[in-house]
Length: 435
Image 1 (spheres, one colour):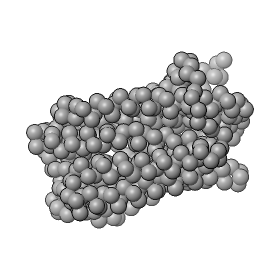
Image 2: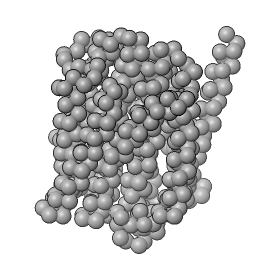
Image 3: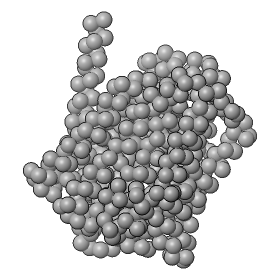
Image 4: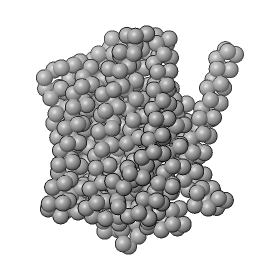
């Protein structure tokens, strides 16, 4: 058991650090934009979030799907087939996110209007989208390569690359916003250049032949491309759900509270990105162990790793919620010094953040089924969590209990998702016993 914990730590710790650092790209933008540009710029970035999240969701869908299948192939000692899956994943990422980036660069104003930006926020939203998506392939490349490099036995390089990117981003954010006064555009460019620095460092893994994965022109096979997308669909739903829920939240908040409510929700979003990144990092860290042992048909070990993930995430969520209760106002004040905004955000955050305790378990559940190539169950749980329960509750609850219903909706959504997951697991057990 001790050796299994060592394996768990080997992959989970660098994955968590990598995900937390990736979240810093977004959070640092928020701090610098909030302090250096203003609350309206924060609101503009929040309006743009569904598009940027969509690009990340597509990337992670292909990455985690490809990583799961590659690990399973390696567990079956089919290394050439696994390497080709990796290369096909990169091909899909370049094509799909490349198209999205082109649309964003050339038609940002239209996207801003589609996202519901008001006349006051439309210009800032469009500017952020154009320059953020100009570096779209850099963002996608950093996320994808870090996951594959980690799975290829080099989690430390994956972690270091993301740290280097974060430091680059922080330095450039300060220069572009406070020294050169580039405003919201400077924040987008700084993030893009930070991600590109991560990509260049990650590529050294392949140039130095440090693992099993190699770079060459892949053999594109329709069946394998579909398999990658199927295996990764649950991750897509996990990643894109925030984009959908943020869009709906923004519409409800704008009608009930106004632009100050959007700015408040934006700050909650920045804080949530870091905290959810912790849970996702642990889940993605156990993915290589789950998939590899599943390929080896070592199901006892698979179950042990799964339980480790649940215990670790749940414990972390309790600690995080206590920190928010004690230090919440101080954390929020980092983004903006307006006392009214801080009070509004803290009151909402205390309610909203309770959902993380349940979300920590739901995220591991989804990752388990994805890593063991059971996409149907993972898809149902993912869709229920982010696209059904959250949207339904955020629309209905404010009509019943007014503004507090906005922040309570996410808690009920996570609880319903967990109960539904337990129901699906019991149904599956009954079906297996009957057979």
